[in-house]
Image (cartoon, rainbow, N blue to C red; front, side):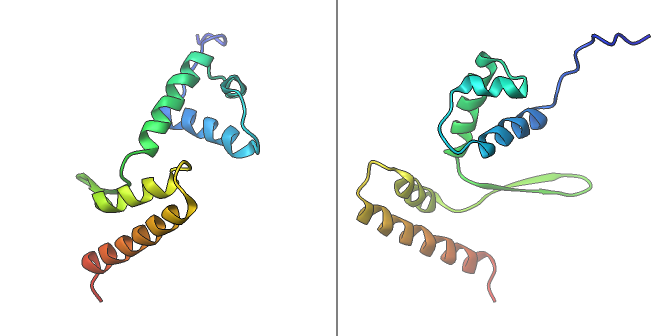
Length: 118
């Protein structure tokens, strides 16, 4: 017999989706305790937010799954990531941020041309 009071655990993906559902719904900054609406404790919310911020500061990747293996590919180079991070830094003057955005766009275009020649 199954216990109706038994707590089922959610997958990491389900938890992340619940967190981003709340984040996407909120238009203003909010306290992390709002994540209790997704049944995530304040301590777990702190850990999740730390993990999310860490991941957002990492290079983008592409995951390709086949029947036998999963390939992980880093997208863009160090220059691209540095330019993007500089653009996202709100402490930098807007003129420098715009130049770094232009440099980022150019590096992405060059990278695409190198990997997908016409």
